[in-house]
Length: 340
Image (cartoon, rainbow, N blue to C red; front, side):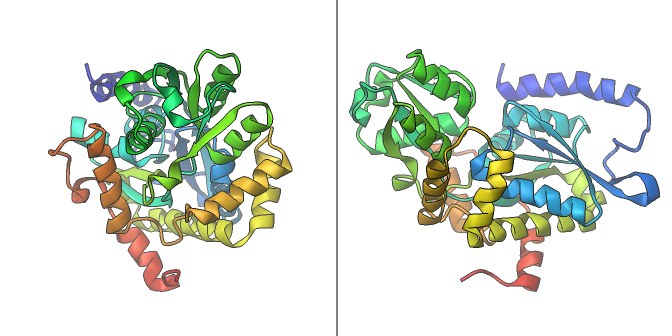
């Protein structure tokens, strides 16, 4: 059974549970309103936003300041976030782009990527102290989040492009960045991907920084907003407000290093100031921030090409029109202009 078929079955049970709760204004696809008609936006995150996604905190804070009641839920994977959205427990998911494409391909679920915030991978491949270079990964174990996830896909691409025999590497499902770094520290695995800040922090604690993924994989849509066609059709104006704020927060992130780092100190623990500073500089060097919403053909086409390269998507992968809707981003750019 594919992971998406498993999700479809799980969603059927979850949707029944949701329906049994009655019409409380929190389900049913339309923007919920609370006291005084205040709009409510329910956002399902594929993981707790980390240093790479500090702008997501800014986005949510700004929505609240604009009078939107934001309700967030955090999951272990993109699949879990989509499960909640499809069941009507969330209005939008902030999750992996490729996972959304796979969802559409394998289930025909009517969902769309409407904006991207991360358009290049900031990941570092971290290793135990005895790992000195990428070829050392042959015969050893690399921790990933889930099969087909970005930690799996991009690691395979990087290793292959850098001449490593991927068939000689054992990929082990461990969990998110923090779980992978803990597994490295205890030598359960010998390699694992980490976002830049978390990887640099791990290096301060004795792990080896083996490779920066952005050197091999530019123009990759990591992450963004996904909504159902049904919700988008009923809430186009509200969705536009959310996307406007999303892109505003990305532009804020790119233009305000000191403020970005300061907000991160409140939202993301366990990082030295040095790791924060160096990680932010990496973000800028690789043009990670999708200043124009990340829905341009170059980024999306390259992302799909990479996924085909590792076999996550076949030649029968759905066209972008089946899983991407750039209209909200285009509307924003018509009003605010593209970044040079």
